[in-house]
Amino acid sequence: MSAFKGKTVLVLGGSRGIGAAIVRRFSAEGAAVTFTYAGSRQAAEQLASDTGSTAVVTDSADRDAVIAQVRASGPLDILVVNAGIAVFGDALEQDPDVIDRLLRINVHAPYHAAVEAARQMPEGGRIIVIGSVNGDRMPIPGMASYALSKSALQGLARGLARDFGPRGITINVVQPGPIDTEANPADGPMKDLMHSFMALKRHGRSDEVASMVAWLAGPEAGFVTGAMHTIDGGFGA
Ligand code: NDP
Image 1 (cartoon, rainbow, N blue to C red):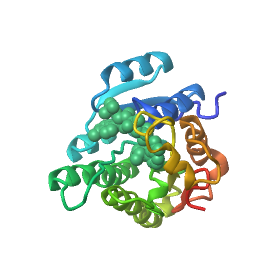
Image 2 (cartoon, rainbow, N blue to C red):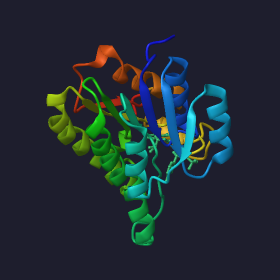
Image 3 (spheres, rainbow, N blue to C red):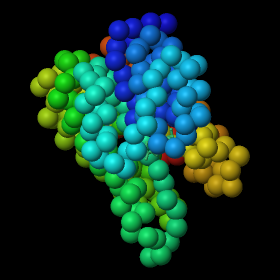
Image 4 (cartoon, rainbow, N blue to C red):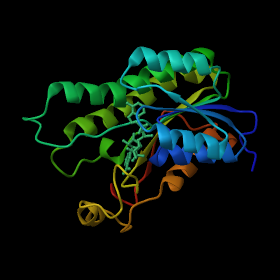
């Protein structure tokens, strides 16, 4: 497969889970892929070696580091912002610094990375941000900060689609439901509750999300922008 041969791709947060599947997909299809990670050095080095991609340390909580990495990687044909975290617990008890860090990783980094990428991006460029079905629907307590952060990405995509559309650059959000990763294992304690909300009673796979990302990044999706693309097994149906 060589659908992305000659394309330059940056994946923010690519060492594990959904991000790693996205790195594998673009690498397998011929792209030159760089990905960032924060803590999982061993996983990042293994993935880079397996796929021929390049791993670099960049903490998405550090705005200036994210902007510098995007600038250094450009001009990009495709930017994927995948890095994201969740914190759980009583909103009245949570440390505000923890919440602000979540917002830096989940909201500030995608915004600044997308803007910085667009400075050098050629016509036909693609920006894809990994949101969540929780941007549309949050059926349980204790995750308001996460829901807030994923809803914010919807406004980001709608607004920047207007800013960059005249240059032929698209920006879209992929909104997964429960996907089997270390952050949300298919055999974890929440599985039965999550499956009770879903039409398909299983977790999704990271490669299923990577397939949607690849479609949005490819030539068939040239007329798709400013939109949310939900892949959730019917969680939000
Ligand atoms: P994982 O926790 O399994 O992996 C997260 C990835 O993001 C890792 O590669 C991690 O790298 C990286 N990352 C996390 N924080 C930072 C940071 N501060 N700087 C740089 N990289 C960082 O998560 P998932 O694969 O499950 O989730 C990926 C995305 O998909 C997230 O945005 C998440 O919100 C979203 N999502 C996931 C769902 C699920 O059910 N799994 C459902 C809906 C959305 P490292 O370990 O090296 O720090």
